[in-house]
Image (cartoon, rainbow, N blue to C red; front, side, top):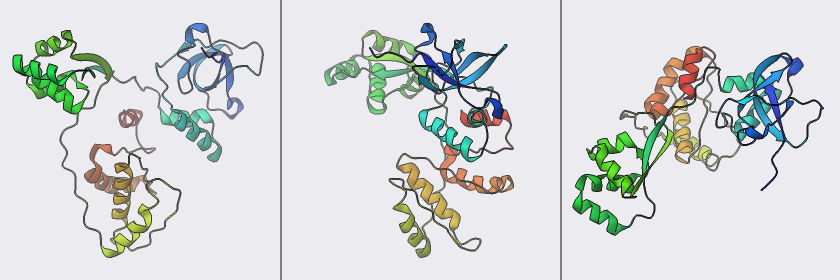
Length: 293
């Protein structure tokens, strides 16, 4: 078993340049598993107790008389390694405290996501077992067919699709054909009628041909689109984003003014639906939390 780091580097939630650096805290044995880069912790700071973010783990502290971490506030890290790297860069580039950047990623008041019960087909289930269940219990067979095609699904959704009740699912669990597990609750989505992209003009096609080679795999490149209002520049943005997302990546669109978001965001909603998230300084904390969730 690999030895675990004994100390954590913590940025406390004080947006002041005087304390804009990581402080070392001892990791108690009971918190060894829970303390990871990206989690929020409660630590002693002077005569106070403050919340902070773990940004690294080390074997040795740079100072003596190190105090212990009091508690871990999340089961899993809120901030993944790539976000932590981005936060460090933003703090240097925009000359602001690192904790200010981290707080902007995850505003105070964010709650752990709700969890719900899901069901999955046992990986080793055989065709013969499926055939036997279908013959003896059609409702149970329908549940198995759904899980075989889709994979894991929330219990409620499976029962609704199969038009079955919990007794059928319980029987499958008792037979060892299906197992239940908990995971983050899925967001209920209604069917969306998204706008189909229009056919590009010859000029737009020429521009897309030049851009798309840098989209997948992603490569750094700067393109300047010059055209009068209504010449089709926004459609280039939309189709570039679509191709990026189809390849499993994400995209960010920056607007120069908050006042421009209403009209432009509506166009993105019509094309991408609920995959669009809007963030700007005019949002309330509740609106930011809803976007992050």
